[in-house]
Length: 81
Image (tube, rainbow, N blue to C red; front, side):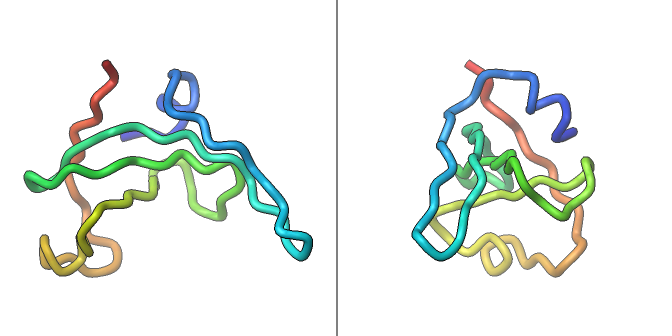
């Protein structure tokens, strides 16, 4: 996945906000699957990661479910429809 490619596509928009102490940037989310697990790819407005890195959230801890360690590559199937 290339984050820059996803940035140009419509996704589920989540606006940024402030909690009075800190400001949080917006996020664009896309439904996806990895290792047979439903999850979401997040394209975050403000990130310190390079364009080759995306963040993935899931209802389970993916590190445990897929036996992942920091830096492990994974295959993600993004659902664009």
